[in-house]
Length: 127
Image 1: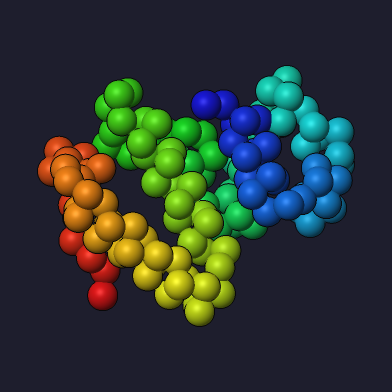
Image 2: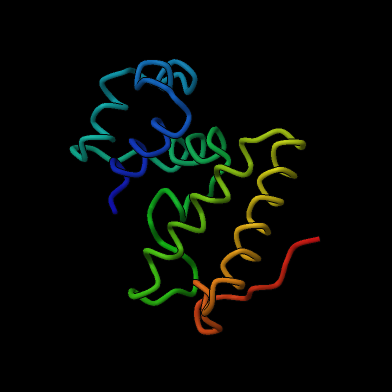
């Protein structure tokens, strides 16, 4: 996944337009448009501002998970997206989100083999 695709995903997730993000980051709309289209790349400072704004890592924006081989990149991106969603919620919403995840895991355990095999992840509940 390229930076432009990740930026589109974040804009959609936050219900923002390119213009709104450009204003929030003090960028020209055309510069942001170029980043999204992939015709230009942001400098380090801009990349950091984008990461800070969305509460994600620069590695997430660059689709470069640390200590991951190529086969796990998609899984790492999904995990970072979950963190982004979680961080954008209020404390009460985060608690509800975690409760729903725990309910999901319990229900799937009752149905038979878990959706998460031991090789894919740990089924421990968060308390």
